[in-house]
Length: 613
Image 1 (cartoon, one colour):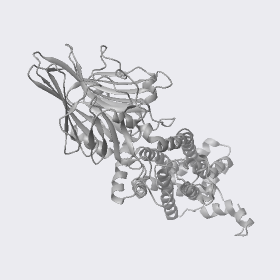
Image 2 (cartoon, rainbow, N blue to C red):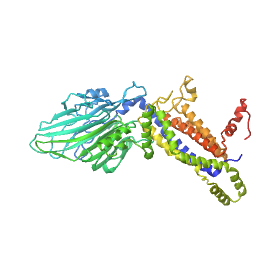
Image 3 (cartoon, helix red, strand yellow):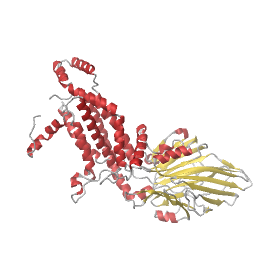
Image 4 (cartoon, rainbow, N blue to C red):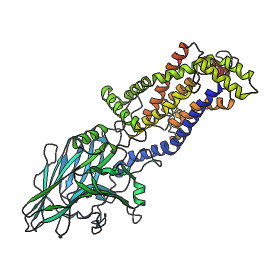
């Protein structure tokens, strides 16, 4: 039996080799480090997520006359987060999504835990801690206030003891008010409210009972000491970010921030600045109609006992508070999980410029963003993220069905033309140019595109990477169970064939965690490839023969949700190709290839008869 046309196969080979090269690189540089990082995250997440910046004096700012960002750090830091919380009287925060407190000493929002998210898949495990006061392990908090502009006046700082005019706790239905007087005629009030999700609204108010006008600059800052452990190669941005008006999206990694000078933006209107982790983020949002300056910067640790510091801040233009009058400025603070629907709702409701870019949609954002929304909708409809993945795969196949149908039809027609193509090659074997002309005429006569066979693979690659991005970044994927042993679709399949999927009483190294779903994926990939005849080039045939095994090991370290998608996509592709090939009357080579590959083995164990090649 003659083999498939080599020109077509070379196109497929190029597409597959490129795919393999990308997957090999991602597996080596990304999937492995990602799995190790996730393990470290699970065992020490509370510590990692609370690494942040030390308090600075409230009067500090980016101006040349202001103290450095780390100003105000003095004395011995508490040894633990709990001792840091106990170092100040507090007003409690209680919402359906958040639990924590506000420090009356300094007025920082520095204690927040996320009630809907836990450190591990166990719902009884501790909640994710986002904000923490300064302690030896770090700190992460928001500080707001005023900077004197012009005539020196006493303003609240990190040592100021505020008075709670309302006892608290701060809830969605019960805002609180903090108050402090400087003894010189100025009374500062901080009115804080919070919604049911992750948005705080802070109204800073100054009442001037002094004999003269006072000029003050409002500011807001996010401080953080320490950085989370992240994969060695960039997949999703983690670090400083923001959209300072017309400057557009700014992304500065933790490593870059400590190695390069601060990034400053002057005279901007609209937007926001913040700090992001993989699943969590904080952002300070100025009045979208007021001009401001913003800074994103990092500071390397000064010694082995120090932690790097990161700062995202903005200052608005000076506000003149006339004698006998009251002035105020409103700032919003986002602190919580990166849930697309919630973030986009804030963007629309509060008019925050490009707030949705807090989530890193990646290069294929035109696929990633709608795919994320589709998955979220299907998840809400079906109640299982794994089923949502399977359903989305069906929809994607339906969308690309016309293209795939045309490609598979072209492949089927190419199979039927094999005898004629082989005859042309034999007839013009000494005249390559003439042979190509005759082949092109044959293609035109039969209305066949010889390159169409690789289109399904080429189309699948960006969809695969877009879905990988969704699965890697989606907060809904985190700790989402499927069925059976898959209790976290964002983590690799925990089983391994090397201990018979847990039947043998010993563990295996991470690189040998080749579970049930990666094996199913590899098997379906092998079946799909065996629908076609063997390759004419022995080297190509060897590559095609080993590909399913190689991909099985590569994808074993990928999130289980992605492997399930790939396996299910293979099954749908097999069904589609089988149907179209049968419809075109072309031969399906699965049975012959199976006997060719396994015939000797089956004969050796006494099953079946060896067939001729």
